Image 1 (cartoon, rainbow, N blue to C red):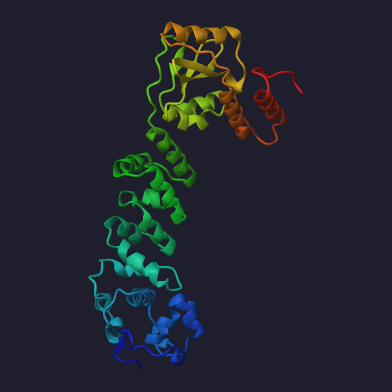
Image 2: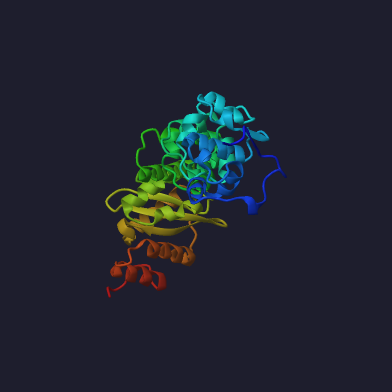
Length: 349
């Protein structure tokens, strides 16, 4: 029978040569097998006979959240409220249910310490209390999440802690966190979760006010969501210019009427240049449409400068190449021809 007290004091442990570790203990205790073997002598029946929750309780104690010794009689007390008193720290209510849901084998000591820290957060504890299977990865995700985002509607869609870093990059304050949580209210699937993150990024991106063009058929693109919608409507790569628009380097407009088009203008010293005018699927537009846009700008007091727009055309067509399907040989050829030489599509190959 074991003694009543199992010492954990530094310098009082047996030397490694005196410790025998059974295969059963390795299977149950994992990386902590040697530490457990110091407390429960070979063949470790006293430990292996414990319930899962009490095994993990010992894991927490050995990880450093403990007094200097474990009272074995207290550990095996019939009532959990008595057994859990082997921990020196005040333990959270509901700890038994949480520990009973932890995966096996026993966790590394660092994971137990992370769990203990997470349990100090009411939101994280609520998630763990209602989770049937709790893994070290889940605990790491909760630990790295901004407290405002420790909600079931967020956590259930995350699989790796590195995803939390991505989330932190796009949602870096509590006001944004509250907005995101509202957007996730009815999201059920992981794919829809990330679709909402895309929408959230779009909404969070502030565009500068584009120059006003006084024409009934011309509407500016005001925000990232609209930029994305127009890209889908026109089947082009407009979304890839979000950073340039947000930085004020370019402004996009939609032209309605019989020949719909998207066009962009960029600031230069002394005025603006029309950098691109494209119809559906990046098609070229007629001279009449080009003239309409030019006249609308000048009539609105915008000075239009002559510019061959070589840099913009190269960038536009490179973005087209990036978005074209690899088996769309015709699309690839057309984009390359426009990049290399002409404003129009040129002769078909």
